[in-house]
Image 1: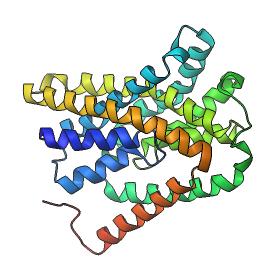
Image 2: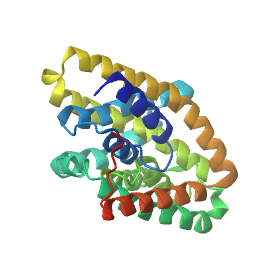
Image 3: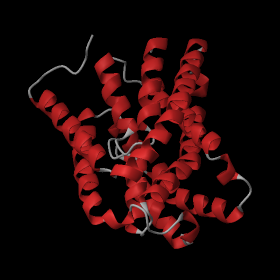
Length: 263
């Protein structure tokens, strides 16, 4: 993996991490197009640079992360299902990470759900429950929704947002809670990946990781502001149509034997 690869993937990660279009799915697709070798480091890279993106949440919403133990308890409870299920199914998830076909089908299904949700949850554009209204049982339910994103292409933020809407949260609050929940989730995923590969990381790869994380952090700052504005005004339908079109195009390419690689 070159520095150019890290730069491009950092941009992709920063744009897609908080949009309900699947950052992991997009990185798998882009990595395949650039012909990046599918190995333990590149798979870990795709997870670790997500931590760079979620650091933007701490910067933009730092006041929400000031000592407030009720808020932290709800985040921890919501994180637990993903943490436990992810640990148990880590080998299965690792295998799915390399499948562009799985990503394509997940993009299409998730897109259909997003388009459908705009009609079903139209009343939650301005009104609805807030994060402070959630119970610990609600937090567990949100964590179970988030765990669906272990399937590449599902979208962690999208799954969590859908969970929030089913619990009656308004769209803005559901989107922001998905940002907050990303912090412990991706911190744990990054820590696990680093522990797994740190002994095999070469000096040149450290620079690649830092570039990816830094670029993802900067781009994610802009993407979050853009996403909140779009959701508040227009909802999720546009993201749903985008997912469907992208997923269908990828399947057409795969099933007609076309090479996804540009090189």
